[in-house]
Image (cartoon, rainbow, N blue to C red):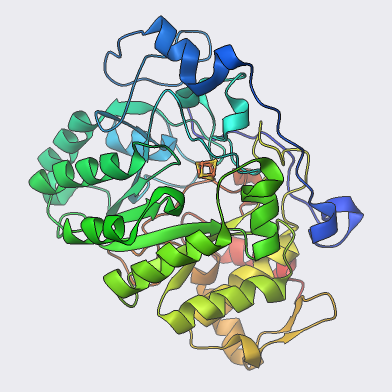
Amino acid sequence: MTCLKPEGTLPGETGAGGGDFNAFGAMQPRSPSEAPKDKRNGASVKANDVAPGGAYLPNYNMLTPNMRSPEYVQMSTAAAITLGIMPGKMYRCGCTRCLNLLLTYPEGCRANCAYCGLARHREAERDYADRNFIRVDWPAVPMDQVIDIVANDGEATPFHRMCISMITHPGSDADTVTVMRNWRERITHDIMPVSILSNPTTMTRGDVRALHDLGADIFTVALDAATPELFDRTRGRGVNSPHSWKKYWEILNDARDIFGAQKFGAHIIVGMGETEHDVLTLVQQLVDLGGHSHMFCFFPEKGSLMDHLPATPRDQWRRVQLARYLIDCYGVRVDQMSFDEEGRVSDFGLAAGELDTVIDAGIAFRTSGCPGKFAEDISACDRPYGDSPPSDIASYPFQPIKKDITKIRRQLKL
Ligand code: SF4
């Protein structure tokens, strides 16, 4: 068993519609269809009502057990391999440093985001716990078992951080609190800090406060889309999904107030139709508020409403990745950079020698996210091959070496 899944369209030089970047006009998602009534809300999982018997590895040929948070959580394939729940090896990675957990329910996520493998429109096609998400399967495991393993490992744990990913479900707010409380009773912040990947749509300021008071370290909001128009098209009315840009910013601002500077951030997917100037202006806005941005390269997730569209061309992605690092971690401002008429970075606002030093250091091209125990600018959340196949890595889940930097420089077209 391996977590490497070379599926979907391979990234290339060409963007959507033959353009040289993924422009808004060419990145239109398909329209979602609603599942028949007898397939909605996890009906078949609940009707079959198979009792879960410990860890469940997604398997499309058997009845999916009736699993529900907070007793059960799903975890990334990389986390399951690192935790010893399933066998496997990852290309050039010994392990992942982030224990990414995902709440789970037979009803699944009630939202319909166009780029996401967990979206509601898939409910006739595949049970929730069997759906792919950021290119990999997510095994389901009893939460008590996860806590036991990590508590027994203590300081020897390979993980630097745990993250609870909420989904859009009526139970998600309360169950996140329960998972957080149960975790904290056995595992201290020093052993492993916790991040929350929130679901603002169902949350109040009080929910944000409760998670902070229980000891969560960092609170993030998955904006995913870089502009209000793109957000509405991919996560809101455009795909019959309940999210709104305004509500996401309301909770983001609550997180800034409650968690404080350097302890909140936003996820952004690059290449869904925004310009490089759009996304880097957002990165600057987050830095000016005291937060950080965690970036993903758009990849056409199999089964999603955008699986017919091309991955972000590598030159577009590399420019944004480098510029994000300069703004987030190196003190360069977006207004020091130059952009061409299509909004593409034409100058990074740094002297050539200094820019070379940053590129050669390679950190800018690693996966971005909440920090681990190595350095503030090295993410614990390395998400191996979550946004690309290993044959053409977008976010490096390890330190790039000389041959990688040579490839990155070629992709940057500097
Ligand atoms: S809310 Fe999150 S999990 Fe649900 S469909 Fe949207 S991106 Fe996927």
